[in-house]
Length: 252
Ligand code: ZN
Ligand code: FE
Image (cartoon, rainbow, N blue to C red):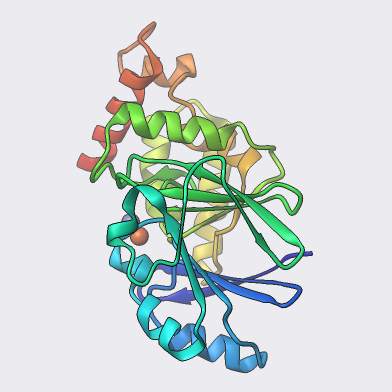
Protein backbone atom coordinates (compact mmCIF):
# COMPACT_ATOMS: atom_id res chain seq x y z
CA UNK A 1 0.00 0.00 0.00
CA UNK A 2 1.37 3.37 -1.05
CA UNK A 3 -0.47 6.55 -0.15
CA UNK A 4 0.30 9.40 -2.57
CA UNK A 5 -0.39 13.03 -1.68
CA UNK A 6 0.13 15.87 -4.16
CA UNK A 7 1.54 19.10 -2.70
CA UNK A 8 1.35 22.10 -5.07
CA UNK A 9 4.27 24.51 -4.55
CA UNK A 10 5.75 27.58 -6.24
CA UNK A 11 3.96 28.64 -9.42
CA UNK A 12 3.41 25.24 -11.02
CA UNK A 13 5.51 22.56 -9.26
CA UNK A 14 4.19 19.41 -7.59
CA UNK A 15 5.98 17.75 -4.69
CA UNK A 16 4.75 14.19 -4.08
CA UNK A 17 4.47 12.85 -0.56
CA UNK A 18 4.59 9.05 -0.32
CA UNK A 19 3.54 7.15 2.76
CA UNK A 20 4.00 3.40 3.17
CA UNK A 21 4.33 1.58 6.48
CA UNK A 22 6.80 3.52 8.65
CA UNK A 23 8.24 5.37 5.65
CA UNK A 24 7.38 8.92 4.66
CA UNK A 25 9.09 10.26 1.55
CA UNK A 26 8.83 13.30 -0.65
CA UNK A 27 9.76 13.40 -4.29
CA UNK A 28 11.54 16.56 -5.50
CA UNK A 29 11.00 18.97 -2.60
CA UNK A 30 11.38 22.37 -4.21
CA UNK A 31 10.62 24.29 -1.02
CA UNK A 32 10.40 23.47 2.66
CA UNK A 33 7.31 25.27 4.01
CA UNK A 34 4.46 23.43 2.26
CA UNK A 35 6.15 20.05 2.83
CA UNK A 36 6.53 20.69 6.58
CA UNK A 37 2.94 21.97 6.75
CA UNK A 38 1.62 18.78 5.10
CA UNK A 39 3.73 16.58 7.41
CA UNK A 40 2.56 18.52 10.49
CA UNK A 41 -1.06 18.21 9.38
CA UNK A 42 -0.82 14.42 9.57
CA UNK A 43 1.72 14.22 12.42
CA UNK A 44 4.38 12.55 10.31
CA UNK A 45 8.17 12.77 10.18
CA UNK A 46 10.03 12.65 6.90
CA UNK A 47 12.27 9.61 6.43
CA UNK A 48 13.34 9.95 2.77
CA UNK A 49 13.78 12.45 -0.03
CA UNK A 50 13.74 11.10 -3.57
CA UNK A 51 15.29 13.42 -6.17
CA UNK A 52 14.79 12.87 -9.90
CA UNK A 53 17.35 15.48 -11.00
CA UNK A 54 19.49 18.36 -9.83
CA UNK A 55 17.41 21.44 -10.76
CA UNK A 56 16.76 23.78 -7.88
CA UNK A 57 12.98 23.51 -8.19
CA UNK A 58 13.44 19.81 -7.35
CA UNK A 59 16.21 19.79 -4.70
CA UNK A 60 15.76 23.29 -3.18
CA UNK A 61 14.62 22.04 0.24
CA UNK A 62 16.95 19.02 0.50
CA UNK A 63 19.32 20.45 3.09
CA UNK A 64 16.68 22.21 5.18
CA UNK A 65 14.52 19.06 5.36
CA UNK A 66 17.53 16.89 6.14
CA UNK A 67 18.52 19.25 8.97
CA UNK A 68 14.96 19.20 10.34
CA UNK A 69 14.20 15.47 10.08
CA UNK A 70 17.52 13.67 9.54
CA UNK A 71 15.99 12.04 6.47
CA UNK A 72 17.95 10.08 3.90
CA UNK A 73 18.42 11.64 0.44
CA UNK A 74 18.26 9.44 -2.64
CA UNK A 75 19.17 10.68 -6.11
CA UNK A 76 20.74 9.94 -9.49
CA UNK A 77 24.19 8.37 -9.50
CA UNK A 78 25.11 10.12 -12.75
CA UNK A 79 24.58 13.50 -11.05
CA UNK A 80 25.52 12.74 -7.46
CA UNK A 81 27.82 15.79 -7.32
CA UNK A 82 24.88 18.10 -8.02
CA UNK A 83 22.36 16.67 -5.51
CA UNK A 84 22.68 18.53 -2.18
CA UNK A 85 23.08 16.18 0.81
CA UNK A 86 22.81 12.96 -1.20
CA UNK A 87 23.23 9.75 0.83
CA UNK A 88 22.29 7.07 -1.67
CA UNK A 89 23.01 7.35 -5.40
CA UNK A 90 20.96 5.08 -7.68
CA UNK A 91 21.02 4.09 -11.33
CA UNK A 92 19.04 1.90 -13.70
CA UNK A 93 18.53 -1.59 -12.34
CA UNK A 94 18.57 -0.42 -8.72
CA UNK A 95 15.51 -0.52 -6.51
CA UNK A 96 14.44 1.38 -3.43
CA UNK A 97 12.01 0.03 -0.85
CA UNK A 98 9.78 2.42 1.09
CA UNK A 99 7.77 0.59 3.74
CA UNK A 100 6.08 -2.24 1.86
CA UNK A 101 6.39 -0.61 -1.58
CA UNK A 102 9.36 -0.97 -3.91
CA UNK A 103 10.33 1.30 -6.80
CA UNK A 104 12.52 0.33 -9.69
CA UNK A 105 14.91 3.02 -10.85
CA UNK A 106 15.30 3.99 -14.51
CA UNK A 107 17.92 6.25 -16.05
CA UNK A 108 16.02 8.78 -18.15
CA UNK A 109 18.56 11.36 -19.36
CA UNK A 110 17.62 14.15 -21.76
CA UNK A 111 16.29 17.02 -19.63
CA UNK A 112 19.45 16.73 -17.56
CA UNK A 113 22.44 14.44 -17.83
CA UNK A 114 21.59 12.46 -14.71
CA UNK A 115 17.82 12.15 -14.44
CA UNK A 116 16.15 9.13 -12.88
CA UNK A 117 12.55 7.94 -12.61
CA UNK A 118 11.01 5.84 -9.84
CA UNK A 119 8.49 3.20 -10.91
CA UNK A 120 6.31 1.44 -8.34
CA UNK A 121 5.13 -1.45 -10.51
CA UNK A 122 2.73 -3.04 -8.00
CA UNK A 123 1.22 0.31 -7.03
CA UNK A 124 1.12 1.45 -10.68
CA UNK A 125 2.76 4.81 -9.99
CA UNK A 126 5.58 6.55 -11.84
CA UNK A 127 7.53 9.53 -10.54
CA UNK A 128 9.27 10.93 -13.58
CA UNK A 129 10.28 14.47 -12.61
CA UNK A 130 10.75 16.62 -15.71
CA UNK A 131 11.08 13.77 -18.24
CA UNK A 132 7.45 13.07 -19.15
CA UNK A 133 4.71 15.65 -18.50
CA UNK A 134 1.00 15.42 -19.13
CA UNK A 135 0.88 16.10 -22.89
CA UNK A 136 4.54 17.13 -22.92
CA UNK A 137 8.13 16.32 -22.09
CA UNK A 138 11.01 18.17 -20.48
CA UNK A 139 13.21 20.59 -22.37
CA UNK A 140 16.53 19.20 -23.53
CA UNK A 141 18.87 21.27 -21.35
CA UNK A 142 21.71 18.75 -21.13
CA UNK A 143 20.75 15.89 -23.41
CA UNK A 144 20.07 15.01 -27.02
CA UNK A 145 16.83 14.11 -28.79
CA UNK A 146 18.14 10.56 -29.10
CA UNK A 147 18.64 10.28 -25.34
CA UNK A 148 15.25 11.77 -24.52
CA UNK A 149 13.39 9.62 -27.03
CA UNK A 150 15.01 6.51 -25.60
CA UNK A 151 14.17 7.65 -22.07
CA UNK A 152 10.53 8.17 -23.09
CA UNK A 153 10.43 4.72 -24.68
CA UNK A 154 11.35 3.19 -21.32
CA UNK A 155 8.41 4.96 -19.70
CA UNK A 156 6.05 4.16 -22.58
CA UNK A 157 6.73 0.45 -22.01
CA UNK A 158 5.01 0.63 -18.62
CA UNK A 159 1.33 -0.43 -18.31
CA UNK A 160 -1.50 1.87 -19.40
CA UNK A 161 -2.90 2.02 -15.85
CA UNK A 162 0.31 3.65 -14.56
CA UNK A 163 -0.26 6.99 -12.80
CA UNK A 164 2.13 9.56 -14.26
CA UNK A 165 3.18 11.72 -11.31
CA UNK A 166 5.25 14.42 -13.00
CA UNK A 167 6.66 17.51 -11.36
CA UNK A 168 4.79 20.38 -13.05
CA UNK A 169 1.30 21.57 -13.91
CA UNK A 170 2.17 22.43 -17.53
CA UNK A 171 -0.71 20.51 -19.08
CA UNK A 172 -2.80 23.34 -20.48
CA UNK A 173 0.06 25.05 -22.30
CA UNK A 174 1.31 21.63 -23.45
CA UNK A 175 -2.17 20.92 -24.84
CA UNK A 176 -2.16 24.13 -26.88
CA UNK A 177 0.99 22.95 -28.61
CA UNK A 178 -0.01 19.27 -28.83
CA UNK A 179 -3.12 19.98 -30.92
CA UNK A 180 -0.91 21.74 -33.50
CA UNK A 181 1.54 18.81 -33.60
CA UNK A 182 -1.11 16.09 -33.97
CA UNK A 183 -4.10 17.86 -35.54
CA UNK A 184 -5.93 14.71 -36.65
CA UNK A 185 -5.97 13.14 -33.17
CA UNK A 186 -9.59 13.25 -31.98
CA UNK A 187 -8.78 11.84 -28.52
CA UNK A 188 -6.23 14.62 -28.09
CA UNK A 189 -8.74 17.28 -29.14
CA UNK A 190 -11.24 15.93 -26.60
CA UNK A 191 -8.61 15.80 -23.88
CA UNK A 192 -7.50 19.37 -24.60
CA UNK A 193 -11.10 20.54 -24.11
CA UNK A 194 -11.35 18.57 -20.84
CA UNK A 195 -8.12 20.15 -19.60
CA UNK A 196 -9.40 23.65 -20.34
CA UNK A 197 -12.54 22.86 -18.33
CA UNK A 198 -10.50 21.47 -15.41
CA UNK A 199 -8.16 24.44 -15.32
CA UNK A 200 -11.09 26.87 -15.50
CA UNK A 201 -12.27 25.26 -12.24
CA UNK A 202 -8.75 25.43 -10.77
CA UNK A 203 -8.36 21.63 -10.76
CA UNK A 204 -5.04 19.78 -11.04
CA UNK A 205 -4.58 17.77 -14.25
CA UNK A 206 -1.73 15.69 -12.77
CA UNK A 207 -1.37 12.77 -12.28
CA UNK A 208 -2.56 11.47 -15.62
CA UNK A 209 -2.82 7.90 -16.86
CA UNK A 210 0.01 6.58 -19.00
CA UNK A 211 -2.46 4.94 -21.39
CA UNK A 212 -3.96 8.37 -22.08
CA UNK A 213 -0.47 9.84 -22.62
CA UNK A 214 0.37 7.05 -25.08
CA UNK A 215 -2.71 7.98 -27.13
CA UNK A 216 -2.47 11.77 -26.93
CA UNK A 217 1.03 13.02 -25.96
CA UNK A 218 2.88 13.92 -29.19
CA UNK A 219 6.26 13.29 -27.55
CA UNK A 220 5.32 9.63 -27.00
CA UNK A 221 4.05 9.35 -30.57
CA UNK A 222 7.11 10.33 -32.62
CA UNK A 223 7.07 6.87 -34.22
CA UNK A 224 3.45 7.26 -35.34
CA UNK A 225 3.22 7.97 -39.09
CA UNK A 226 0.67 10.74 -38.41
CA UNK A 227 3.25 12.76 -36.47
CA UNK A 228 5.98 12.24 -39.07
CA UNK A 229 3.55 13.37 -41.77
CA UNK A 230 2.53 16.46 -39.78
CA UNK A 231 6.19 17.55 -39.78
CA UNK A 232 6.85 16.66 -43.41
CA UNK A 233 9.06 13.76 -42.26
CA UNK A 234 7.12 10.75 -43.58
CA UNK A 235 9.24 7.62 -43.46
CA UNK A 236 11.96 9.19 -41.31
CA UNK A 237 13.24 7.65 -38.08
CA UNK A 238 11.50 8.45 -34.77
CA UNK A 239 14.47 10.37 -33.33
CA UNK A 240 14.36 12.81 -36.26
CA UNK A 241 10.62 13.25 -35.84
CA UNK A 242 10.98 13.61 -32.06
CA UNK A 243 13.69 16.27 -32.53
CA UNK A 244 11.40 18.20 -34.90
CA UNK A 245 8.48 18.09 -32.44
CA UNK A 246 10.72 19.17 -29.54
CA UNK A 247 12.21 22.03 -31.60
CA UNK A 248 8.73 23.17 -32.64
CA UNK A 249 7.61 23.20 -28.99
CA UNK A 250 10.68 25.25 -28.02
CA UNK A 251 9.65 27.86 -30.60
CA UNK A 252 5.91 27.70 -29.84
ZN1 ZN B 1 14.04 20.36 -14.27
FE1 FE C 1 11.31 21.35 -12.92
